[in-house]
Every structure is written in C-alpha cells, then in structure tokens.
Length: 53
Image: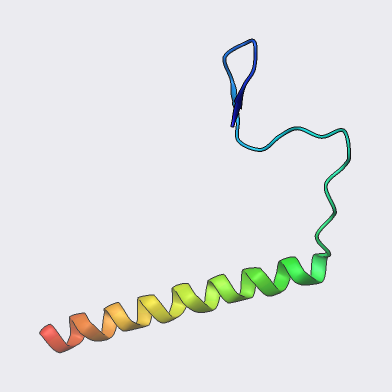
C-alpha cells in the first residue's frame, strides 16, 4: 500500500498500462456461480426454518 500526497491510500500500485478486459462470457459464468451459491444458501435456511416450525 502507498499513500498519495492528498492522503489517499492506494491498495495496488498504479500502472500506466490498461488492465486486461474480462471477457463477457466469463463475467456471466461468475455471476451464475454467485447466484447458484446464494440460491443454495437461501434454500438451506428456508428448510431449516421449516424444520424448526
């Protein structure tokens, strides 16, 4: 980490090069994984609450 003259903290060093672009297909795959994980957790919680009732 580095600190700028204005007091901001940079977490990663700044470089003049542009960051590589993540292909749209991969972004969709990651989003689908997150949705699946969240759905699974919600289903588990709802099953647990039903069992408690």
